[in-house]
Image 1 (tube, one colour):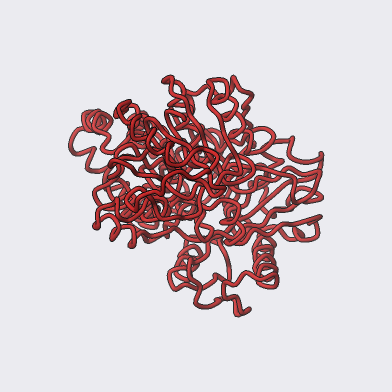
Image 2 (cartoon, one colour; image 1 turned 60 degrees about the vertical axis):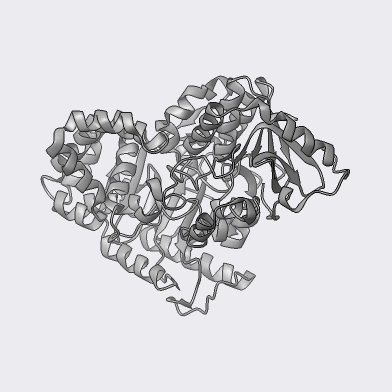
Amino acid sequence: MSDAVVVGAGPNGLVAANVLADAGWSVTVLEEQPVPGGAVRHDRGVHPDFVSDVFSSFYPLAAASPVLARLGLEEYGLRWSHAPGVVAHPLTDGRCAVLGRSPGTTADSLDAFAPGDGAAWRRLYELWEGVRPDVLEALFTPFPPVRATARLAGRLRAAGALRLARTLALPVRRLGEEEFGGEGGRILLAGNALHADLPPEAAGSGGFGWLMAMLGQSYGFPVPVGGSGELARALVARLAARGGRVLCGRRVTEVVVRGGRAVGVRTADGGSVGAARAVLADVSAPALYGGLVAAEHLPAQLLADVRRFQWDFGTFKVDWALDGPVPWQCAGAVGAGTVHLADGVDELTRFAAQLAMDRVPDRPFLLFGQMTTSDATRSPAGTESAWAYTHLPQRIRSDAGDEGLRGTWSGREQDVMADRVERQVERFAPGFRALVRARRVLAPPTLESLDRNLHGGAINGGTASMHQQLFFRPGPGTGRPETPVPGLFLASAGAHPGGGVHGAPGANAARAALRRRTPAALTAVQRFLAGRDRTGSKGRPARAADTAATRRHG
């Protein structure tokens, strides 16, 4: 028996486990996959000489996160690396907006589009620097962030606070038009907004685009040296040093509720693990409510809200082993770790409109990662480990590219879509396809099979739109890690503040568990273990009220 059981060894689950272990709790983490990390893993599956990040790669939120900073992961071997440039957004006419490592570099890039846009960028950056500590505290602490909001209001005074609120609520197209005379600043903001599922005309997309761009300006888009899985490895090593354990290949099928509280979990192999104090679930909200936890233990309104839960877009990703550097026609893209590929804001709007109509885009907006440029250990000298991903509708009705894609993601459909992705790269880097030594295609079902939280390839734990953020996440009136079941806490990106590798949902859940620790629950756990031990041997039959409906997860 452990004080706490954590379901899922993604970054949020591992952060939660570390916070609890720091408080002296015994912790067991159960993970379905054969290795920990969730969507923070790397391999050599494209080519044996090339390291490829399977899911996420660049971590501005991790670099900014006070949660991860407090863990001191550098003591456990984690090292960060940066590309010379942060983000580039080339256009087919040869111009290129560049988010550099310094505000001056970015400003010079934008002045090339329209004189005065560099000064506009500096003003946005000065605004960010003035509010950065309070914005980050508000972002990474449980909702509502009372102290950070009060300090921010005091700092800005009434009129300034209202202007900032308006800026954050603007669609990114409108924000770009208000701030910049040329296309450069507008595409930098809009491309960053589409790191989530926020189209240029969506309310709040301006705030998200500004936040991501400013994080890049302040912290860069760093990568772990050696592969993204090094971040997960450091979290596991830190946990082990404090007595915690991570058990892989253990799919949790039930959260057991007894005596009105969560007392442990059952696994697909018939085993069970008791939790004397808390169960923390690094799983999606729909998988938890009415899935791992039986509907009979949950309020009817919560179940109704979960049925309205909206996933973010699906993801289609291609990894490459390239025989040489990407032949960008714009020199500004050469040294950037992340490159956004769409020919202006209008093309981004066209792409988003096709997604809204459940169509596979014919000119997919791509986020392109140059991993060897960012970390020289990723591939042999003179080559490049690279990837690109694009968004897809969760439900596909038609193909805007007229190639018959229907979302079956058969071998033929995967090849057709991967070829479409490569043609989009060729628009900005003629000769790219001739450099491909090997490629790997990760369609939405493949991504989900490798991490069950990525429903249909969704990588954000649910839409980032305003109607499912803050106290609407994962449903109206929530916004905190506590659940209706005492002793059970939501520790995934399904809780505030949502997606991104920063550890905040896990840390928030752990702190909530520490505030509500109840050793008296040991008697309920002991009854649970008496009925069914860790190896799965059965004692007395469980009552209907003691069981939970099964849902594969872990």
